[in-house]
Length: 490
Image (cartoon, rainbow, N blue to C red; front, side, top):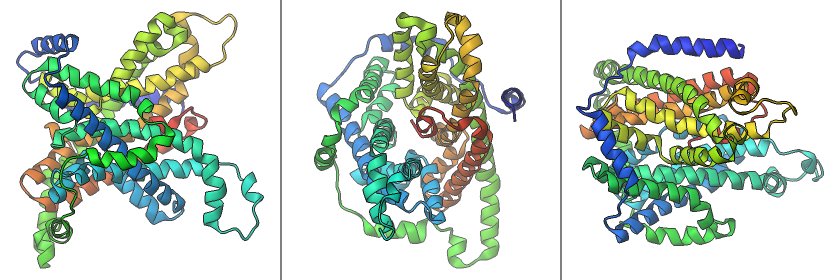
């Protein structure tokens, strides 16, 4: 498929799907509410500095410790990546959003440190395993051939593969830890005492000046966390951070056993009543699975197409050759703000201002993902070799840079589709009729037996979208700079 045909086909698909989406504004005075929020952004206020520092510390602790726990497990799984069962298991756990994991773990551990840590560590282990396996497979085989033929596979991996890949693995750890900080903040929306918990309260009560302080604190934490986490400090943080986390560390094995053996299984299945089970599955399909799957896929496609348009507008702002040194600083600052703010948080804010519909979710997903892709494309554009008589400014962007980077631009968009799909499912927790809405309803009604099918549908949809994305982007994905940043939650 050519670049032109794919682009035109995507635009036509968007026009056909647009009438199916709920894009209405339900707020009484959205413009006035936006003005109040803008005033708050210009005048951030901190009500309690001690609470402010504590929330920042907990956000850092959950995010970094969850990533540190996931990393060795991911490396171990990468060692076993040739086994199909390992690959399938990693695909399943990483397809389920951290908030879904947190809501499920709350049923067992309550608001304990285990809920936050495992909600991050479980999906991140699957993500890290996939990326680590790809990095290890890319290492040259020359050193391996120098080893004696009888060298055991594990020793080959430890002596050659892992040391050669270590710089790339370390770099990716920082990328994953940055994602962990964002996810840690979002876990506050389910009750954990991280930054998102206090931001949720401030936004709910219209205290936009206080909410702005929490938002800027998150951006500053993500922008400067590498200074707090030099490579040699990882073991120290692993020992110190657990002491910062409040709550009971004990494990409720009885609750876990009951969840796994009773509550997650439908009553007709436990009773062996097959006609009743068939009726139960049919009702769930028509009432939740079909509308949830359809709306999740619809939202993801529209958000992806909106991201494509927004990327074209944001990319030149961060490109030195187009914006110049003066505009470059402002462009990078804008992209940093949008990249650092989680999609869920942006969607939550816009739903407060506009009301629950697909429009706030589309805009939130568009802004965050377009900022990531624009950042990557701008860096690529500034490295391209140019003729001595190349055009300048906007003409350079339109007639030189954009045509040459059209393939990577489409490939990055398709890399992000799987991530957009995960977020499309989880924004249902905010009232949009995607799979997350029906997961939240099942939890609120204590119908936990619905969760395996709902979460299983999320996994299946992610697997299908990932397969479609790989097939579509194959002609242009090779040789992209830092594709893993575009391909993983960020």
